Length: 316
Image 1 (cartoon, rainbow, N blue to C red):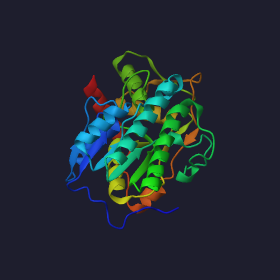
Image 2 (cartoon, rainbow, N blue to C red):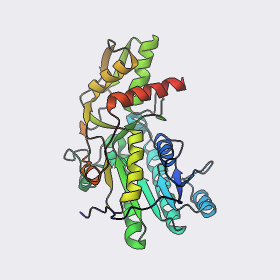
Image 3 (spheres, rainbow, N blue to C red):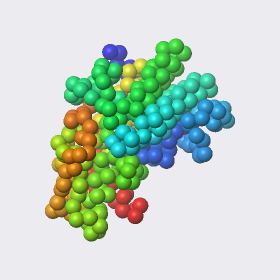
C-alpha cells in the first residue's frame, strides 16, 4: 500500500476551508481547531446537502479551497436499525452532492469522514484499512455503513479519474462536546451519561445498559479527532482511507461503571437488558499508519468523560 504521506505539507494558510456539518460534534470540534490556523472558515446555514441544487448554488457563490464533509445523519443502534432508509439515502446524497460539487468548482482538497462501521462485522482485529469490503457488514448499521462506503469510494474514484486530491478518514467511536443527547438516537456514551445522571437526580433507581455489556469498543475524544483531521489535510494525499482511533478498548460494562464514577454515583446498580442488541462483539481499529506518521491522541477516557459530563450539564 502506498502510504500517501506528503514530503511537503499542504499549506492551509490563506485558504478558505468549508466545514460541512459545522453544528455537529465533529464539525464544531474541527471549527474550534481550525481557528488556530491561518485560514478562513466557511460554514453553510440553511443548505440541504441532500439537494444537489442547494449544494451547487452554495459552492458556486463561495468557492472554497478546501472541503471537509463532516455532515451526516447519525445515531445509535436503535436509530440505525429502525430507520435504515433515512440513514442510507441521506448519507449517500450528502456524500454524492458535496464530492461532485467539489470537483465541479475546483476544490483543491477534500476530506470525507467515514466511520469504523464500514468494516465487516467479522473483520480481523485490530481492523486494518485493507479489510474494507472483505466481508458482510453488521446488520444493525448496514444502511449507514453502505452510504459511508460509497463516500469513500467516490473520493477514490474522483481521485483516479479526475486527479482530485480527495481523501477519506475513518474514525472509531467518538464522544465529547456537542454530542447528541436523546433517548432514541444517542450513541453509547451520551446514552449512558443521561442514564447515570437520571440515577444521580433520583429520576431512576438503576442504570439499564443495552445488551450483555461484554462487547469491546474503542473511543476517541472528538477534539483529538479534530487534531487528526487537520493533520490529514496537511500531510496526507492517498486513495486509501485512514483509520483514526485511540488504540485502547474497553468493555461496555466497564465503560458504564466508569460513567457512573464520573457522574458521582459509582455505587448505583447496573442492569443489562440482553433483549437489546450488542452489535459486533469487538471493534478496534488498526491506526498504525497515522500514528507512524506522527499523530497521537492526547485525551484519555477518564479526562474525556469528565469533560463530556461538564458539557452535558450545561445543556440541562
